[in-house]
Image (cartoon, helix red, strand yellow):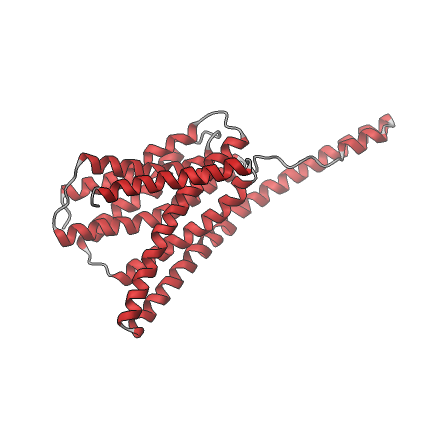
Length: 300
Protein backbone atom coordinates (compact mmCIF):
# COMPACT_ATOMS: atom_id res chain seq x y z
CA UNK A 1 0.00 0.00 0.00
CA UNK A 2 1.39 3.40 -1.03
CA UNK A 3 0.87 6.20 1.47
CA UNK A 4 2.00 9.85 1.51
CA UNK A 5 4.45 8.94 4.29
CA UNK A 6 6.13 6.31 2.14
CA UNK A 7 6.20 8.65 -0.88
CA UNK A 8 7.96 11.33 1.18
CA UNK A 9 10.56 8.88 2.53
CA UNK A 10 11.15 7.45 -0.95
CA UNK A 11 11.59 10.94 -2.41
CA UNK A 12 14.05 11.90 0.33
CA UNK A 13 16.07 8.71 -0.04
CA UNK A 14 16.27 9.09 -3.82
CA UNK A 15 16.42 12.73 -4.76
CA UNK A 16 18.92 13.93 -2.15
CA UNK A 17 21.39 12.63 -4.73
CA UNK A 18 21.00 16.11 -6.29
CA UNK A 19 22.91 17.59 -3.33
CA UNK A 20 26.19 16.20 -4.67
CA UNK A 21 25.72 17.20 -8.31
CA UNK A 22 26.89 20.87 -8.01
CA UNK A 23 30.48 19.58 -7.90
CA UNK A 24 30.23 19.41 -11.69
CA UNK A 25 29.98 23.20 -12.05
CA UNK A 26 33.32 23.91 -10.35
CA UNK A 27 35.46 26.07 -12.66
CA UNK A 28 39.17 25.76 -13.46
CA UNK A 29 39.87 22.29 -12.15
CA UNK A 30 43.36 21.02 -12.98
CA UNK A 31 44.18 17.45 -13.97
CA UNK A 32 45.60 16.63 -10.53
CA UNK A 33 42.47 17.81 -8.70
CA UNK A 34 40.30 15.97 -11.23
CA UNK A 35 42.20 12.79 -10.44
CA UNK A 36 41.70 13.34 -6.72
CA UNK A 37 37.94 13.93 -7.14
CA UNK A 38 37.64 10.86 -9.34
CA UNK A 39 39.58 8.82 -6.77
CA UNK A 40 37.08 9.89 -4.10
CA UNK A 41 34.33 8.65 -6.41
CA UNK A 42 36.12 5.30 -6.73
CA UNK A 43 36.27 5.05 -2.92
CA UNK A 44 32.51 5.67 -2.68
CA UNK A 45 31.78 3.10 -5.39
CA UNK A 46 34.06 0.50 -3.76
CA UNK A 47 32.10 0.85 -0.54
CA UNK A 48 28.79 0.45 -2.37
CA UNK A 49 30.15 -2.64 -4.12
CA UNK A 50 31.30 -4.38 -0.94
CA UNK A 51 27.94 -3.52 0.60
CA UNK A 52 25.84 -4.84 -2.30
CA UNK A 53 27.63 -7.96 -3.58
CA UNK A 54 27.84 -9.75 -0.17
CA UNK A 55 24.06 -9.40 0.16
CA UNK A 56 23.54 -11.31 -3.09
CA UNK A 57 26.14 -13.85 -1.96
CA UNK A 58 24.35 -14.34 1.38
CA UNK A 59 20.97 -14.92 -0.28
CA UNK A 60 22.59 -17.50 -2.57
CA UNK A 61 24.41 -19.34 0.20
CA UNK A 62 21.31 -19.48 2.42
CA UNK A 63 19.28 -20.91 -0.47
CA UNK A 64 21.95 -23.55 -1.13
CA UNK A 65 21.93 -24.59 2.54
CA UNK A 66 18.14 -25.02 2.50
CA UNK A 67 17.99 -26.86 -0.83
CA UNK A 68 20.56 -27.44 -3.55
CA UNK A 69 17.84 -27.41 -6.22
CA UNK A 70 16.48 -23.99 -5.24
CA UNK A 71 20.00 -22.78 -4.54
CA UNK A 72 20.95 -23.48 -8.14
CA UNK A 73 18.44 -20.88 -9.26
CA UNK A 74 20.10 -18.33 -6.99
CA UNK A 75 23.53 -19.16 -8.42
CA UNK A 76 22.16 -18.66 -11.93
CA UNK A 77 20.55 -15.35 -10.90
CA UNK A 78 23.79 -14.13 -9.32
CA UNK A 79 25.99 -15.08 -12.28
CA UNK A 80 23.47 -13.75 -14.84
CA UNK A 81 23.04 -10.47 -13.00
CA UNK A 82 26.77 -9.98 -12.59
CA UNK A 83 27.44 -10.75 -16.25
CA UNK A 84 24.61 -8.54 -17.49
CA UNK A 85 25.81 -5.66 -15.30
CA UNK A 86 29.36 -5.86 -16.67
CA UNK A 87 28.79 -6.72 -20.30
CA UNK A 88 25.67 -4.62 -20.62
CA UNK A 89 27.81 -1.53 -19.98
CA UNK A 90 30.52 -2.94 -22.26
CA UNK A 91 27.92 -3.11 -25.03
CA UNK A 92 26.73 0.39 -24.17
CA UNK A 93 30.26 1.74 -24.42
CA UNK A 94 30.92 0.00 -27.73
CA UNK A 95 27.63 1.22 -29.18
CA UNK A 96 27.60 4.84 -28.02
CA UNK A 97 30.94 5.98 -26.57
CA UNK A 98 33.48 4.28 -28.86
CA UNK A 99 31.61 5.33 -32.01
CA UNK A 100 31.71 8.95 -30.91
CA UNK A 101 35.40 8.69 -29.99
CA UNK A 102 36.25 7.19 -33.39
CA UNK A 103 34.43 9.99 -35.15
CA UNK A 104 36.26 12.60 -33.11
CA UNK A 105 39.55 10.75 -33.65
CA UNK A 106 39.08 10.63 -37.42
CA UNK A 107 38.28 14.33 -37.50
CA UNK A 108 41.34 15.16 -35.40
CA UNK A 109 43.50 12.91 -37.60
CA UNK A 110 42.36 14.65 -40.80
CA UNK A 111 42.99 18.07 -39.28
CA UNK A 112 46.41 16.95 -38.04
CA UNK A 113 47.35 15.54 -41.47
CA UNK A 114 46.29 18.74 -43.18
CA UNK A 115 48.28 20.84 -40.74
CA UNK A 116 51.33 18.59 -41.17
CA UNK A 117 51.15 18.90 -44.98
CA UNK A 118 51.01 22.68 -44.76
CA UNK A 119 53.95 22.71 -42.38
CA UNK A 120 56.02 20.46 -44.65
CA UNK A 121 55.23 22.55 -47.73
CA UNK A 122 56.18 25.73 -46.00
CA UNK A 123 59.36 24.17 -44.62
CA UNK A 124 60.43 22.91 -48.02
CA UNK A 125 59.73 26.26 -49.64
CA UNK A 126 61.92 27.90 -47.05
CA UNK A 127 64.54 25.16 -47.32
CA UNK A 128 64.27 24.45 -43.60
CA UNK A 129 64.37 20.68 -43.06
CA UNK A 130 65.05 21.12 -39.37
CA UNK A 131 61.80 23.05 -38.91
CA UNK A 132 59.82 20.33 -40.70
CA UNK A 133 61.35 17.67 -38.47
CA UNK A 134 60.45 19.67 -35.40
CA UNK A 135 56.85 19.96 -36.56
CA UNK A 136 56.60 16.17 -36.93
CA UNK A 137 57.95 15.43 -33.45
CA UNK A 138 55.24 13.58 -31.40
CA UNK A 139 53.69 15.65 -28.63
CA UNK A 140 53.44 14.18 -25.10
CA UNK A 141 50.08 12.72 -24.09
CA UNK A 142 47.92 15.21 -22.16
CA UNK A 143 47.54 14.43 -18.48
CA UNK A 144 43.82 15.17 -18.39
CA UNK A 145 42.95 12.22 -20.68
CA UNK A 146 39.21 12.98 -20.71
CA UNK A 147 37.52 15.59 -22.85
CA UNK A 148 34.18 17.15 -21.97
CA UNK A 149 32.14 14.64 -23.97
CA UNK A 150 34.01 11.64 -22.54
CA UNK A 151 33.54 13.01 -19.01
CA UNK A 152 29.80 13.40 -19.62
CA UNK A 153 29.55 9.83 -20.92
CA UNK A 154 31.47 8.52 -17.90
CA UNK A 155 29.12 10.42 -15.56
CA UNK A 156 26.13 8.91 -17.36
CA UNK A 157 27.58 5.42 -16.96
CA UNK A 158 28.10 6.01 -13.23
CA UNK A 159 24.52 7.30 -12.90
CA UNK A 160 23.20 4.14 -14.58
CA UNK A 161 25.19 1.86 -12.27
CA UNK A 162 24.16 3.77 -9.14
CA UNK A 163 20.56 3.85 -10.39
CA UNK A 164 20.45 0.04 -10.58
CA UNK A 165 21.81 -0.14 -7.03
CA UNK A 166 19.31 2.42 -5.80
CA UNK A 167 16.41 0.51 -7.35
CA UNK A 168 17.19 -2.47 -5.10
CA UNK A 169 17.52 -0.08 -2.17
CA UNK A 170 14.08 1.31 -3.02
CA UNK A 171 12.60 -2.19 -3.19
CA UNK A 172 13.95 -2.84 0.31
CA UNK A 173 12.37 0.36 1.62
CA UNK A 174 9.02 -0.51 0.06
CA UNK A 175 9.14 -4.09 1.36
CA UNK A 176 9.91 -2.88 4.87
CA UNK A 177 6.92 -0.61 4.71
CA UNK A 178 4.73 -3.40 3.30
CA UNK A 179 5.62 -5.88 6.04
CA UNK A 180 5.65 -3.52 9.01
CA UNK A 181 2.96 -1.07 7.81
CA UNK A 182 4.84 1.80 9.44
CA UNK A 183 7.96 3.82 8.81
CA UNK A 184 8.80 6.61 11.21
CA UNK A 185 10.41 9.58 9.54
CA UNK A 186 12.80 11.37 11.91
CA UNK A 187 14.85 14.43 11.08
CA UNK A 188 18.04 12.54 11.86
CA UNK A 189 17.11 9.82 9.39
CA UNK A 190 16.35 12.43 6.74
CA UNK A 191 19.76 14.05 7.30
CA UNK A 192 21.41 10.64 7.17
CA UNK A 193 19.83 9.78 3.83
CA UNK A 194 20.68 13.22 2.49
CA UNK A 195 24.36 12.87 3.36
CA UNK A 196 24.61 9.28 2.18
CA UNK A 197 22.97 9.86 -1.18
CA UNK A 198 24.76 13.13 -1.78
CA UNK A 199 27.99 11.10 -1.82
CA UNK A 200 26.49 9.20 -4.75
CA UNK A 201 25.61 12.49 -6.44
CA UNK A 202 29.18 13.62 -5.92
CA UNK A 203 30.38 10.39 -7.52
CA UNK A 204 28.27 11.07 -10.60
CA UNK A 205 29.35 14.70 -10.94
CA UNK A 206 33.07 14.44 -10.13
CA UNK A 207 34.26 13.34 -13.60
CA UNK A 208 32.66 16.48 -15.10
CA UNK A 209 34.28 18.95 -12.67
CA UNK A 210 35.72 21.88 -14.61
CA UNK A 211 33.68 21.20 -17.76
CA UNK A 212 30.48 22.85 -16.43
CA UNK A 213 27.74 20.70 -18.03
CA UNK A 214 24.27 22.15 -18.57
CA UNK A 215 21.78 22.13 -15.70
CA UNK A 216 19.45 20.08 -17.90
CA UNK A 217 22.07 17.35 -18.25
CA UNK A 218 22.79 17.39 -14.51
CA UNK A 219 19.07 17.09 -13.77
CA UNK A 220 18.82 14.11 -16.14
CA UNK A 221 21.73 12.40 -14.36
CA UNK A 222 20.07 13.04 -10.99
CA UNK A 223 16.86 11.42 -12.19
CA UNK A 224 18.73 8.42 -13.61
CA UNK A 225 20.70 7.91 -10.39
CA UNK A 226 18.11 8.86 -7.76
CA UNK A 227 14.77 8.22 -9.45
CA UNK A 228 15.02 4.39 -9.23
CA UNK A 229 15.01 4.62 -5.41
CA UNK A 230 11.65 6.37 -5.50
CA UNK A 231 10.23 4.01 -8.13
CA UNK A 232 11.61 0.92 -6.37
CA UNK A 233 10.07 1.94 -3.04
CA UNK A 234 6.63 2.38 -4.59
CA UNK A 235 6.89 -0.97 -6.41
CA UNK A 236 8.14 -2.71 -3.27
CA UNK A 237 5.16 -1.43 -1.29
CA UNK A 238 2.56 -2.95 -3.61
CA UNK A 239 4.34 -6.00 -5.02
CA UNK A 240 5.82 -8.75 -2.88
CA UNK A 241 9.33 -9.38 -4.19
CA UNK A 242 11.42 -12.40 -3.22
CA UNK A 243 15.05 -13.03 -2.39
CA UNK A 244 15.72 -14.57 -5.80
CA UNK A 245 14.71 -11.34 -7.55
CA UNK A 246 16.71 -9.26 -5.09
CA UNK A 247 19.74 -11.49 -5.72
CA UNK A 248 19.52 -10.80 -9.44
CA UNK A 249 19.19 -7.01 -9.01
CA UNK A 250 21.98 -6.88 -6.42
CA UNK A 251 24.27 -8.85 -8.74
CA UNK A 252 23.26 -6.60 -11.65
CA UNK A 253 24.22 -3.51 -9.63
CA UNK A 254 27.49 -5.17 -8.57
CA UNK A 255 28.44 -5.93 -12.15
CA UNK A 256 27.78 -2.36 -13.21
CA UNK A 257 29.86 -1.04 -10.31
CA UNK A 258 32.78 -3.35 -11.16
CA UNK A 259 32.78 -2.07 -14.74
CA UNK A 260 32.64 1.58 -13.65
CA UNK A 261 35.38 1.22 -11.01
CA UNK A 262 37.69 -0.48 -13.53
CA UNK A 263 37.21 2.32 -16.07
CA UNK A 264 37.61 5.13 -13.55
CA UNK A 265 40.75 3.56 -12.08
CA UNK A 266 42.45 3.81 -15.46
CA UNK A 267 41.53 7.48 -15.84
CA UNK A 268 42.10 8.76 -12.30
CA UNK A 269 45.40 6.94 -11.78
CA UNK A 270 46.93 8.87 -14.69
CA UNK A 271 45.54 12.25 -13.72
CA UNK A 272 47.24 12.66 -10.37
CA UNK A 273 50.06 11.35 -8.17
CA UNK A 274 49.88 7.96 -6.49
CA UNK A 275 49.68 9.63 -3.07
CA UNK A 276 46.69 11.81 -3.99
CA UNK A 277 45.04 8.93 -5.81
CA UNK A 278 45.18 6.61 -2.79
CA UNK A 279 44.19 9.43 -0.43
CA UNK A 280 41.12 10.11 -2.59
CA UNK A 281 40.06 6.45 -2.48
CA UNK A 282 40.55 6.41 1.30
CA UNK A 283 38.54 9.61 1.81
CA UNK A 284 35.71 8.45 -0.47
CA UNK A 285 35.46 5.10 1.29
CA UNK A 286 35.43 6.70 4.74
CA UNK A 287 32.75 9.22 3.78
CA UNK A 288 30.49 6.52 2.35
CA UNK A 289 31.11 4.21 5.30
CA UNK A 290 30.53 7.02 7.80
CA UNK A 291 27.13 7.93 6.38
CA UNK A 292 26.12 4.26 6.23
CA UNK A 293 27.23 3.77 9.84
CA UNK A 294 25.22 6.84 10.83
CA UNK A 295 22.07 5.24 9.39
CA UNK A 296 22.84 1.90 11.03
CA UNK A 297 23.16 3.55 14.43
CA UNK A 298 19.72 5.08 13.88
CA UNK A 299 18.33 1.57 13.43
CA UNK A 300 17.63 1.63 9.69
